[in-house]
Image (cartoon, rainbow, N blue to C red; front, side, top):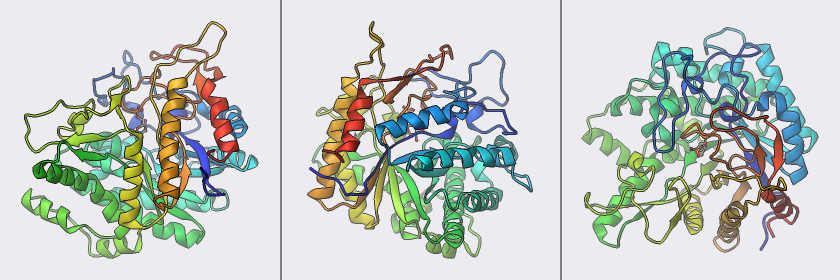
Length: 466
Ligand code: BGP
């Protein structure tokens, strides 16, 4: 078992779920800041302003903003070769509309990326991770507004120029396909229907393609990728109608990677829009921009798989499966405490599908097990379940590389340090190798503690996956 020599082992977080400091040093409000905590099984809904009696878990999060040196030191101790995080647009342009950027915000990320470089950790930076300036949400209905394309291009140009010698790997939009599932979270789209979601996705496609072009002009060595939430969907049975249903569900998310990796809308999606009477408003240059702004690599998140049946009365809807229009449970798989079905072989299958389809390098920039962790009397955290989950997935990655020939270049497990959950706003859905003392209602010292998986992952990296 071996991994490529320069394989980018690391970990991942996002600005909004980790940084806290939501209103310091000139930062503006973002769509994420307006999401109060919910509970397991209850979707988070944005408020129009910050309400005093609600709890907004991103406001403080794990205060990575003030703890990043300590945290990166711990990542370096594990031997990280890469670290994925995002830039919070509202630290750079507080409303998204300013003429000149906020220097304090620019300086923060310069310090953060320099700190990574100090330990030879390669930053992998997402430009937009579920974070839209709230001003743009209010004035343009988020990404439903065409105005955001050029505002985003300006923001991208600003950060590309500033960090051109610090950052090589960039991702444009986190889980861009979630626009069709969670339009507010993915695009600050508050008032939404299928037509609006399709138009908002188009704006992100064009904005991403523009960013790719601008980035390559600023530094031809930049590698700029797209990011797909991999929602691997099997047929519920071998009934051809179920197979067809799973193909259609697969198209629902491959559509996004097709546009970004191939540079044009796939025919199945154009037919679907026609059937649903959805009309995309395009500017004359858009098709050219999409083609010229194809991405250099594809990054994916992978947590689970679901199944699909043609007959709408069969099967049991999996947790979260209702978002994917009746994603069904798979009798062969077990689930985590949040009902996400654990499927390591599915990761190998997904990597094959994606590499066959696009023939460009792949990165796994999110994977992991959300779980409740317990601190033992001796202060240790015995997270063997997490070690087990990750071992199984790494084993399948290795097969994808060595047996199937997939060009996989990075693995950054999600929430390498415990952060706030995006789905529920809980703190106690933990993914990390590092425990953070904070609970669901914001109590705790924020102290960092190594879990058992910390030394395990250190060993994995040291032995290049062995
Ligand atoms: C992905 C998001 C992340 C992240 C992860 C885990 O969809 O890109 O932001 O949080 O899912 O989800 P959760 O936090 O709900 O467990």
